[in-house]
Length: 178
Image (cartoon, rainbow, N blue to C red; front, side, top):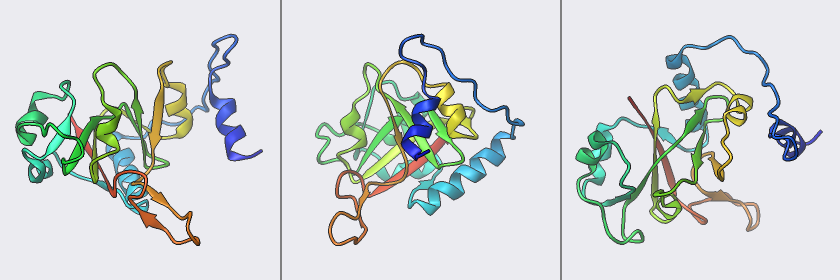
């Protein structure tokens, strides 16, 4: 069975709405999950950063209004033109430790362009919103449109040479927040 088929069989049945039961796993401590997540993300070219590190984007980032006040204080005033911003800051719904991925749901008030246009995409994920596996993430998937982001944008379309940032951000930061 290919990767696509494996993922599709994990999704809810469109006719009945029933969700498959994910495999039972021993609950891993959050700090261990974040450690694994950071290692996987790093291998993909992304980085886990601290909230304080966002200070380098002060007054030079785009972000949605629903960011926590503590984050808004670090970022200052948002840039009005997404194409001029150094960073696009979005809220993530889940982090997946085994793949180093973050899940972003399309919700009212969230701009998808903030995650695609600036050269750096910063995803804020609540520390408690991390799961061990893709199975667990898919089991928690809501009905709205969502996307899994796994590392910065990359392609090897031309002569098999890997190029970063062609179809989106050149760098991806994930910031765990309380």
